[in-house]
Image (cartoon, rainbow, N blue to C red):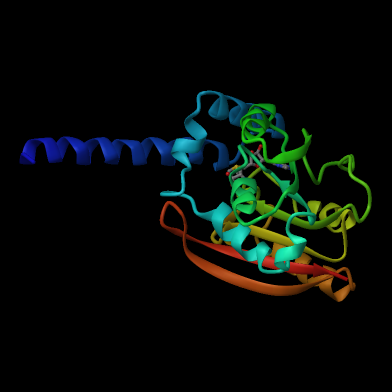
Length: 234
Ligand SMILES: C[S@@+](CC[C@H](N)C(=O)[O-])C[C@H]1O[C@@H](n2cnc3c(N)ncnc32)[C@H](O)[C@@H]1O
């Protein structure tokens, strides 16, 4: 290949990377209301750009979370285990779980545009268009789920710390909660800094859940590390 064409390809790739980074930064930078965030995601999904901007080449959270939570279920449990994908977005985590044998999954997300993309995958049973962790409880019974997984739902203006109570409420004793997020958010997102991990530890002290694993992922998003927490409900 001529050197000139190679340079053009390199420039285009670099440009894609910058656009993807910017699109992600805009919604995680802070200063947006919850409704503005949901609307941003509506548009991001509707243009079809969410899945290309945050494809597996740049963002591995869904695969990491799916692999982690799947290890807690025996092969013969996977088709019936009821799993809630929280902040499901366009359904990448659900798609990974489906590939691993899960067949009884629901999706929760405040962005109808993201959920519409998730619907197209035909892997979820129920769709809940809601925020988690705000004043109103989400429309799910106590102990309804065997597992709950979140990938990419924690960040500036996204899922609040108080949502952990709600997650615990809807997962049965012995069930699993798996949270994958960017590691640096623990240190600079105002809602989580010095709060999220102590809150998790207090919940353990109060006998609500028990930490099973906390793993670091070197390349979680845009080359930055992530962390995957897993808890078992007491
Ligand atoms: C970066 S996307 C992650 C989507 C998907 N889980 C994935 O990994 O591709 C973040 C998602 O969090 C959702 N979200 C934001 N605030 C939320 C809240 N309070 N409760 C539930 N989901 C929320 C957004 O609508 C968006 O779909």
